[in-house]
Length: 478
Image (spheres, rainbow, N blue to C red):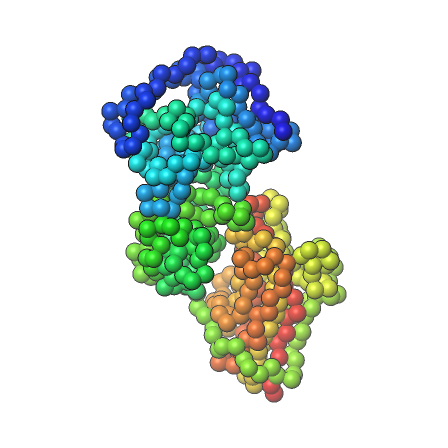
């Protein structure tokens, strides 16, 4: 494995002057810390360090290693705290106290891995620190850019005997203003930084859940938070060692602040809170959608109103079926025909929505069935199958409308509710498996309805995945 060699060529103005650091007692916060005296020329930027790591990756290396001959530091601010037990043996530091930095000096963050617990006794939230990079490694651990010690092709931990001389505290305790951002606008640049999400709520199907004390919570609890503005979701990750794990997640809506990161398996984006105080869902007026819930039918009618398996469709071309509507609300992507025998195989030919790499700011697509006259038949049901390929924070809904007139121009102005009993594949479901919706009863409704399969994504590679749909059948008893 190659290393990043001497940085002196890239940072020609660095002075070869050792910093003078007070070796004080790190057991408790100390306001009388001797301020580190580090020449400005020895301090580089987060952007430069990240660029060096990306250069190492482009050269075929798993991580970059800084040489130990030239003193080089980054200065940043601690935005994580392990006081509540939701972070462990790590510091999250970012380079800015707010989000007012210019584009040429973006707000960035790094994870620093340290083999020491109770780091909040030493490093306060908002404390300015200097990280001495000499001999350290930078790489990706579980999808998160991490600074630590070289350990083969991995980033190991900085040990207890040495961290005092590597992470130097300043007297400055800054007020950190989180970046207020919408889920659709988050990018990889926001990882390892403090963000605030407004107009959020816990998904209605998880109401009453604790942060991380359910029977299925092993190492972490994951709770789905959704945006009332965009409908996009993100998982809140809470350690089963957190002191607030047994608390009920607030059931209103409001704002939540935390570190934007990745789960341990690097499968999806997460938000990690420093404490339960970081969630403020004081508004009791939730934004849950209208629901139609007649239950799952125990009887499948012998008569079929229509069945669609997409076999006549063309691969990678928009779905075109008489009586159906394939509507692009945002972006350039539509529901398309798809056929594959790979690990995420289709059922012969299926309908697929894939917006990753589209370059669109947003992707929203509707596939709407022909009208279903519930008054003309008894025991009407609908069933279908769904699958996904790492959907991340894109999602699919199965909606219904009783007031849409069938005109594309009025789709977004019509009233659409959720077909609550239909099972739709989740991002946590097995990769490439197909899941049955169940035989969804529609008999408690009346009049004419339309059923829509709606995909919503952000257009960003790190967020948007793939949803697949097949074998849609509307049946009735008589």
